[in-house]
Length: 309
Image 1 (tube, rainbow, N blue to C red):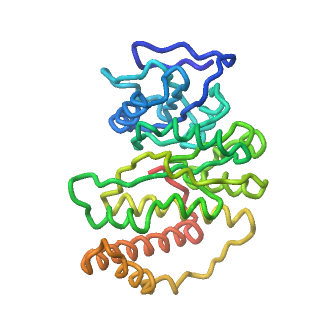
Image 2: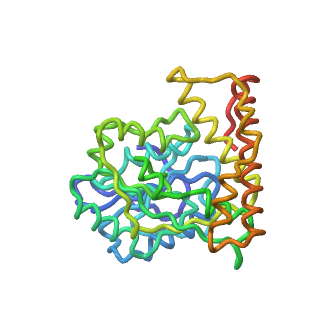
């Protein structure tokens, strides 16, 4: 067992013999304020606290738990020195005691019924081993900004991912048997590991289902640079996956320099967007499109290494 510095009161690890209904695994990296909100939501679950455990994996052990941090009695802090949220999630899998694992992120806010609903869905569908829970985006302030509207309409759409056989780890529920069948996350990547893992699971014949009532809320990205950073990381992960399959194309994606008018048409047809908002979201979409092109050039032509941030 690794030593975990930090909180003043550290619960003892739950015995593997204890029949817990669920293990919640949360990687965190320099995000204590957001993590506190997430843990407060887990402390308010309708599922009794003695039926689940919370495993928080600190992916920056040099950034210790701050003073006054509130850790639920059924939670443990773990350290993972290997960079990357997927290495941290694997650390959580290693320590988890339950057969049903709930993966979420430190900036997510679980609804009170999140765990109970997830358990009920899993119990009612024993033939399913993967569940993509609902990720509901919320604004950071009272009103939606243009970049937040981009996230809402063109960003994180969990149900569409599930229809393609995938799910993001902001709300992913897995049976332990599926992980044993497919293997753990690829801890050599910093981005795209959730999609890579789900592709392996799909190829292995593991079905997936959308659990729409198992809800976590996630603040929409409010800054353009955050969208661009995420897009560049995902594009880098996609290029690496393609490279392993011998699908790298070194021809510049010149056609992507042209804005997508199909995207604009779809945005203009959305009843909850004004014409001005639709054009604004379209502009964000184009800026991100350009960022992906630059990332392609940076990685394939300039051969520059990945960055965490």
